[in-house]
Amino acid sequence: MFSTIGLQFDTGSLASMLPFVAMIGVLYFFMIRPQMNRQKKEKAFQAEIKKGTKVVTSSGIHGKIVEINNTDNTVTIETGAGKIKFERSAISMELSKKYLAPAIK
Image 1 (cartoon, one colour):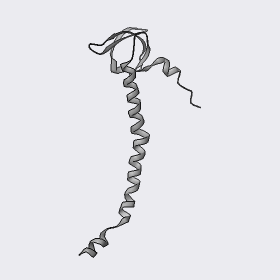
Image 2 (cartoon, rainbow, N blue to C red):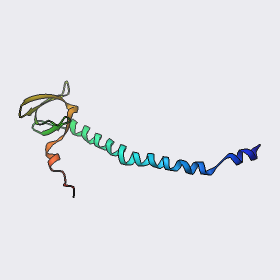
Image 3 (cartoon, rainbow, N blue to C red):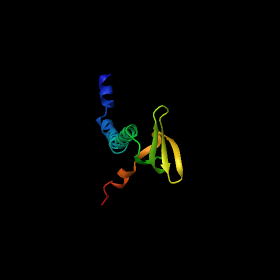
């Protein structure tokens, strides 16, 4: 009985799963982990924004922060067309950081 069980065990099955494990590892290190780091930086920026900062919203609207309301977590942004009220989570990045980013060569 034990000899038949021993014959059915194949070390090749473990080796055949190795590419799948490697693909999951590559996905994690090249896609999931950088996205999580980007989200952490964005949340930290959203928490420390202040009046007068030029920002870009996640929808692409550029403007300057005029008012911050901490009770309902909103921000009023002054654009060329007027003032618009946004959720704090809609602020994507500081405008000056976008233009000061290093050029890709």
